[in-house]
Image 1 (cartoon, rainbow, N blue to C red):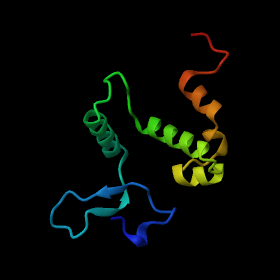
Image 2 (image 1 turned 180 degrees about the horizontal axis):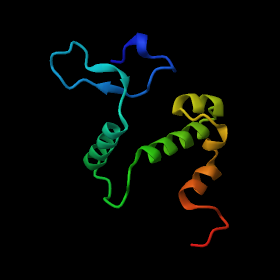
Image 3 (image 1 turned 60 degrees about the vertical axis):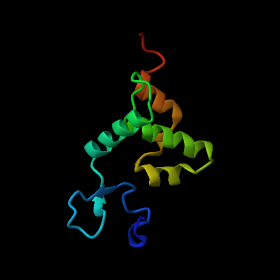
Length: 108
């Protein structure tokens, strides 16, 4: 269970996992590293039997979360607090698509 004194919006969402059995807590009071998160995503996708051509990345999970929050009518400022985005423009759907596919004016 997540510790109550480490559950505010200023604390990292993913906690780093202790790997040594000598610790009395399962977590460390710091953010989970991006490499470890990527390893966990790959393992979860494999266990969920995702098609191999489907890539699950930290960015795709974040994009999915932003879409779900938007669909739930969560205000952009709250979405930014959850995802860590610093600029409201970076969570607009048309900008997400442009970052991934390029601008609408570009030639393929």
